[in-house]
Length: 128
Ligand SMILES: CC(C)(COP(=O)(O)OP(=O)(O)OC[C@H]1O[C@@H](n2cnc3c(N)ncnc32)[C@H](O)[C@@H]1OP(=O)(O)O)[C@@H](O)C(=O)NCCC(=O)NCCS
Image (cartoon, rainbow, N blue to C red):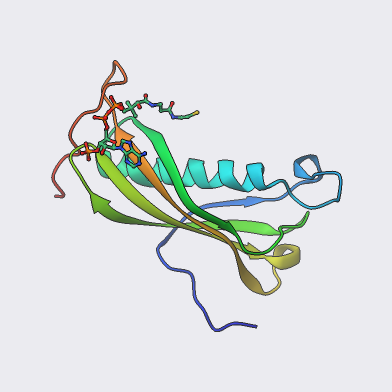
């Protein structure tokens, strides 16, 4: 077992359910990606104080499978901020069998863009 610890803020926790499995009984990578997208949206939306969209998903690495009954914990950390864009570093960790040991299962870097009511890029406000 690794001594590595999650990096970033715990932004979302959810449980992997039987409906989220593929034919092999493992959880779909797309389900994990969508939970990470939700967490990235929460984190970026708070920083941008409003609506955001995902423009890019980079360096996505599925390190280990997720199983039914695992609690998926998504940690987020805001990296580089441009004019309208924000880099969000994401890590997904599984608490095995609801409360067992914790393992990093997926990592990625998403880019989210702050948008206005017309869906056009707007500047990310300065940090308070
Ligand atoms: C996000 C969106 C509004 C951007 O519009 P756009 O006219 O392409 O805007 P720009 O070219 O000015 O780019 C906006 C920012 O994204 C950055 N960007 C563009 N392409 C990028 C990429 N592939 N990776 C990382 N950043 C990127 C730009 O550098 C710019 O950053 P900055 O403002 O910090 O300098 C538009 O592309 C869009 O609506 N995309 C769909 C988003 C969506 O629906 N996501 C969910 C998918 S189901």
